[in-house]
Image (tube, rainbow, N blue to C red; front, side, top):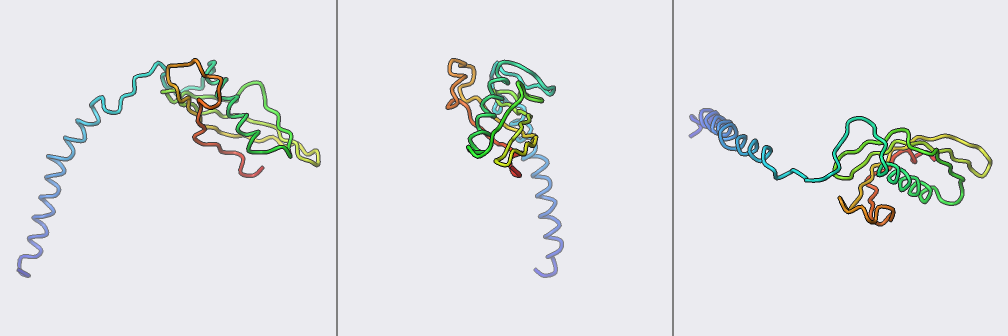
Length: 145
């Protein structure tokens, strides 16, 4: 058996490659081409920054989350609209904004942040103003407050 160890290894390796090539990869291509991962929604993704009523509301909810995270020790002010907002599709948004923070010693600094937020009710936009219908997926830019 020791005599054929290398030959057995090479044959097993060739069998593994052939099974990957003939069985696994065609199955993966069929799954990827199917409608398994397709989400039917009215909200389409955009590679360019957009400004819609939904992104404006998402911006307000991100601002409220920032205010709650910073607490009452600092005075926070936000511009009227976000620097950029992108729709990722399926009511998932990325908001890039800025805010001014004034601490107890009256020092004001400007900070940028990025917020990823999702509207949970999909096409039903009746409760769009309620924060309970939104989920903050991620928030960055507050690390060095």
